Image (cartoon, rainbow, N blue to C red; front, side, top):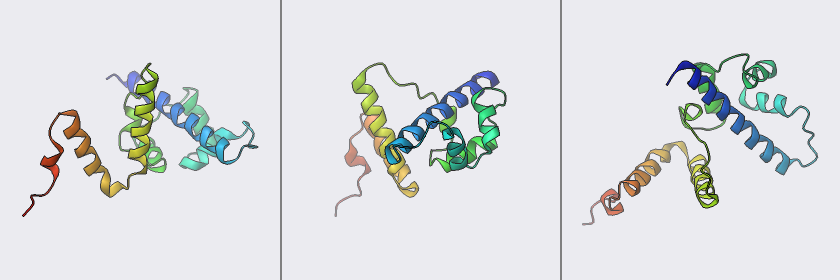
Length: 136
């Protein structure tokens, strides 16, 4: 992946997270105005609001250290901002992807590895019983 592709993907995914933040914020605080939403998001992830604006409009690139800090603040897995998260066109696939990501986000960090192991087994069409401890 080229440097430009990485910066574009990070910007797209940051925008996706900003939109998610706004939806959640509006659900919790319906009277919250649109004005100032970027500042609230920046504060939420621990980034200067001016820097966040520069990241969004492409005047600055999102580097690895800041990417890591934002992923941590948003409880995203490491490298999430570097991964393509374009939603599939099919509505059922979109709903499934959204549900899986929400399950992952709600899973405690210590259990995420086990969750990924289960899904990897399912994707590989391996029996789940292989993951269970032997019965004595």
